[in-house]
Every structure is written in C-alpha cells, then in structure tokens.
Amino acid sequence: MIGASEIEATQLDGSTCSARVQAIDFESGIAVVAVDASWKGGVHLHPDDDLALGEDVFLVASVGDGRRVNSGAVSSIGLFEAFWEYALDGAITVTADNPGLPGGPLFDRRGRMVGVVALSQVEVGKPTLVIPAAAARAAVAEASGGGGRPRKDPRAWLGITCYALRDHVIVAGVLPESPAEAAGIGSGDLILTIDGEAIADRRSLYGRIWRHRSGERVRLRVLRQDRAMEVEVAATAIEEYFS
Figure 1 (tube, rainbow, N blue to C red):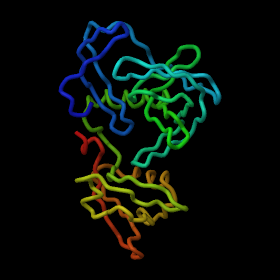
Figure 2: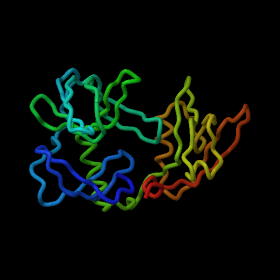
Figure 3: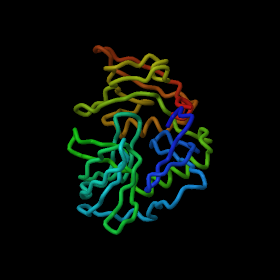
Figure 4: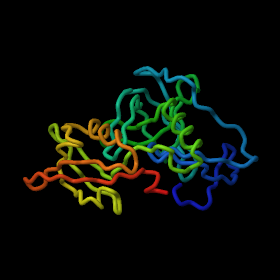
C-alpha cells in the first residue's frame, strides 16, 4: 500500500468500494484502511490473547480470484525474530498455510478474530506467522494516533538485515540510502558489540539498537575480513525512511 494513489476494497458479496490508507505502522507492516459509507459489515479483533497450543484455527486469505480459507492448529506462541530489525513477543504460528496475501484475519473455533496473518514461512517448517490480537491492536492504535506521521519519539532504525551464526550476528545486507549504508556497514560484517556491549543473537542486537531514539548515534564494533573496526551510525526512524 506504500505509495498507492487508489485502493479498492472488495466485500463478501463481490461488490467493491473505494478506500484510502489512513495510517501505516511500518514496524509491523499493519495498515489502517478507511472505507467509504457503502461498506457492509466487518469483524473486530478479539480483546484477549487467550489462544492455546494445539487449538483449532482457520484463516481467510485474499487471492486474485477471490478468497481462500485454510484450517489448521496453533503450533507455537512465542518470540519471533525477523531477519530485518523487527521482533515480536507472543507471535503465533499456525499449521494452516496462507495461500494469499498478508493482512487477512485468523479466527479461532468460535469465530473470533484472534490475529492478523503476516507471513508465510513454509520454507522453515512454520507455515504461517500471525500477529496476535493485542499486538495488532497496539499497532493500529499507534498508527492511527499518529495519522500516518512518524511517532513523537520513534526508536532507532539502521536499515540492516542479518542472520545468526554460532553465537554471532552477521549483516546480510543494508538498504540503499539507509543510515547503515551511509555509515559504511556492509554485507558480511560481523557485529561484535553495540555501545560496548557484546552481541550474541538477533534479539540482543535489536534490543541494543532500540535503546536509542531516532536521531541518536549508535556505536558498533564490527569484524570485517579479520579486522575489527568501530562504526558510528546516525540512526533514523523506519517511518522517516519509508515516508
């Protein structure tokens, strides 16, 4: 939806109506879309995160020729660490494969919307990642409250992707024109410390970065071709980069 000038929403009966992006939470990827007065019905996020492992669920996915429904069970509830600068506590994975686009609802066996479908992870044996209701509500509130603008006190963002290897974190890539690229961080750099604190996994890496706010400088010590060096990154906010 980033950069879209027009959006068309399709209702259950196949009719369409115009819509607009009201706000985007760039950290989670959740967008708030406002539809016109002709929209009929809708579902609401369940107020409690009370799913249990093994519980039956089903998801609804939007595809090119309509909708698809897949059923399965909750396979895990816990920390999700992305290869980009994102982590989610209480993330849900389900055995139901998502055959369409992200953003669809996940329902429990009582028909309550308990999450927002985010990613298909078939290649790692976790078919679908779901943002739980509480986190989705927080993202919607955060985005809507800011009216789509950067938050008042956004956390630092460097613009890197990374992977973990034997108690180390290695930079996989940097986004073009990101703070990391401007500071000279490159693919293959092994991150040793941030602000003097050792880094052994992605969660600790993200946590150290997020102690900073946008506009602050983050000190990294990296290992590049058997040579350790200090790199200082002038962090920004992810909203500023994509806006």
